[in-house]
Length: 401
Image 1: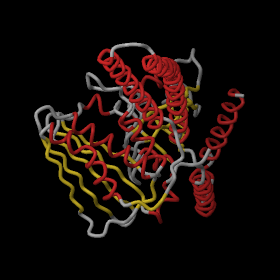
Image 2: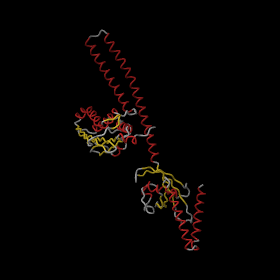
Image 3: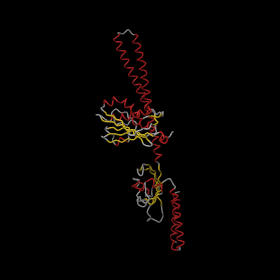
Image 4: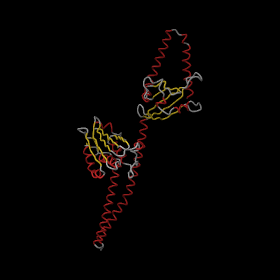
């Protein structure tokens, strides 16, 4: 097939050379007609190339872009006068090595590679690079056609699927562990109840019986507390469809801070709430999940401070969103750790479980919102929870599966 393509290209080039060789025989009128015809054909081909979704580039061996269709210019951020001067290596680094392979006649004439670019926007491109022959012998410089295909959506979909599978496996493991712990707890509870009943029937001095009953009661209370911890843990990590109602975020924040008041005082942390937007709109949310969400964020903020500090909770809004920002004066997060902060079981704390921010991300996604995180080591962290207003929520919700 490649030989046929090359022979076809050779015939077209030979045809053009024959036409050019006869230019001396043409009078001015025929020459004008020929030039106009060539211009029309070039315009037709350019129009056809501009209707293609994939980017099409023609480059030389130095990487200079000699031609780009409209899609190619959009994908790599070319301006109208860039073709002829822009170098592909600067726009999509690390491609020169691919052309070294292409120029080796002993290897395949086509190479496909995936490349990550950050300008004009962050996206993933699949590049297929093919060497083309224009004929004319050894002195003719090599040319290459580069086909660009935007695979950002496919890649993100794959990453989301892998993340979902990983999270589901964690949920399954956690549920299994909780079940295995729950069974012996129930057995212990039953046998302690039997011991307490036996104590009432045995002829044991009142003082000794009272001490034993008290110890059994403490054990039963601790078992009940462990059972509650397991239920709360499973309720926090198990994916649940939110029961959406109109919710006032201010009231949710006040409730959460009320629960955390004693801990804030014990840690010597000042906490303030600022409502920037005069009339904060309600959001559609599950009150229980939103409390869990805000509790996790403020808990992280508290634990980032060792010797006191401050937490500022700011509520604001614009035409489309309601924002809840939690700013702390804690130790901050390093650049290397920020990218891992939503991964399950990743934690920088000595006694952390690494599920808090993963749960925050899951709840926000289920509510059609987004999470933003900005941190400076040694200065503090700001977590921004962005909720869509009820009118904008339809376009923000994740697609149903």
